Image (cartoon, rainbow, N blue to C red; front, side):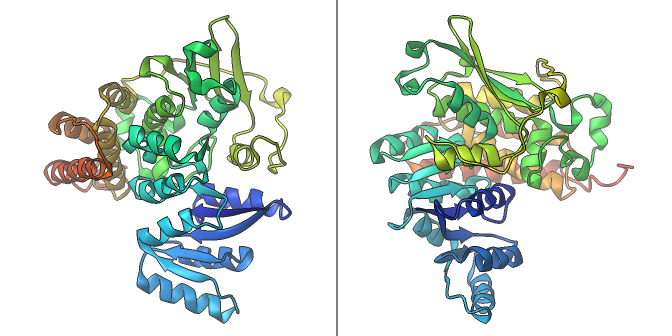
Length: 400
């Protein structure tokens, strides 16, 4: 019986995790759940899965959740804030932690799970993007087991040999092929991108995701962040990671070997597959995902990414090559930009414009410790907010 903490339980990854866990009550037990704004959903999840602990953002939310739990006769302990997240991530009773909090907010609790030597199911790519070297040093020092949940990184993990930690070249790997769907704007005329709405950006053709991640997918910043994450997870250089647009989202990524072999992992676009793989690794369990019907798919298409259409991908690759604090700067500026776009304060193409300006303004510095990571993050957010004051407006006017 493995006891699981799910950080970000009310998001799409958290809900998919709980779906898989519920299918195997003989193997998994929920120890703790966390939620941020969807408190009603968190209450329902607590009533269903009966965790020992739950975490909410503030005291007011805690009082509300405690009242709801007690009314149903449930005595789940309710903790508050980042300290609470770190506590349930590192608790001695916990065997595995699903790290599914979106953005920089997930870094400290994910790192707490790593430092406690847990089995960490990493869905929070920003943790590695922001603090890659420090994060991987902590993994090695603690003996934590780090398993990627992003469908692309999980696919790469499955296609690499078991001893890939020796380095890609020693195990005969030439390059990693990171697939991307191209999102909802893959074929949209470039001039029309000025007028796209948040609703259009969030309407992904293949995946059901949260709004922030959906916008990142539309801009292909998500793929840029995944490129940086892949470099840290698999000890690869940016030159060894190639992005391939694959609209069907059936091949989740590929590994190219020096002998000419290319191994791919295929499956229906459902996050329960990589979640089940990581939960049970090195075994396999039922995820609830339907078998892949190749006859229904009929074809698989591939194309090179258009960096004129997707400038965020170019910016992410540049940040990966620069290293040090550049990825943290990139991530922070992107979080501010996406939030502004979703709020109607900037137009879709201005996302890349804000990020590029912040990258050009902020010096890239070595990251000696976590404080330096958050200092770079804070400065980038301040620069992004200043940019927003100068260039932001009511972008909803004239969209129609």
